[in-house]
Image (cartoon, rainbow, N blue to C red; front, side):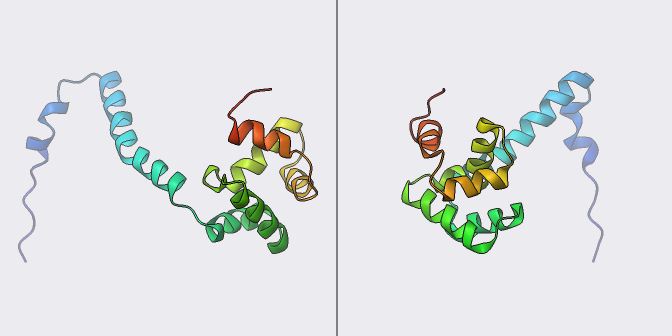
Length: 123
């Protein structure tokens, strides 16, 4: 097999006269082009098992993770990310995220969940 001929010099010509600032901006523009579709895909293509997995990795036990995911699914906000919801509520109340999750399971803070994730409102 013959090695691939390098065409780097030809492909890089459009970069040669860019300043460091322009190169930096160009780099981040390219990163956004790659990452934005992944973020969109993740927000629209999650599943209860993926979200339970996130909560398990955050330190919740399987029963807690299932209870939270079931409630988020019921409220049609699973696409917001189970971990994100729990973390946001923890931040909102200045408490540990494990406590926030357990409080949600116990029925607390659902008005805040509705306000933030369903109605999109502020305090």
